[in-house]
Length: 100
Image (cartoon, rainbow, N blue to C red; front, side):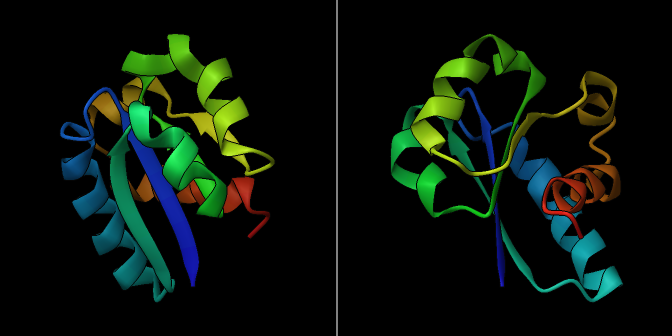
């Protein structure tokens, strides 16, 4: 099972996106776990993830969060995609980072 971690300032705004990503994954039959956390939890949850995506509103923290996550594939979610809460597109971004 693929472990996808999303991070934002408090983990709250990303929760809507998580629900939409879970629905898209279910529709595709993609076996994964998707959860949202605060960037403050990066050191704790990042290294155990298969891929980490952070919200554009915390992109200024990208370098710090990337280091705390170790060698995990990492990216900032596109601002438009995030703004539309496009779960399917963000799931596709995660899969692309994983080479799937």
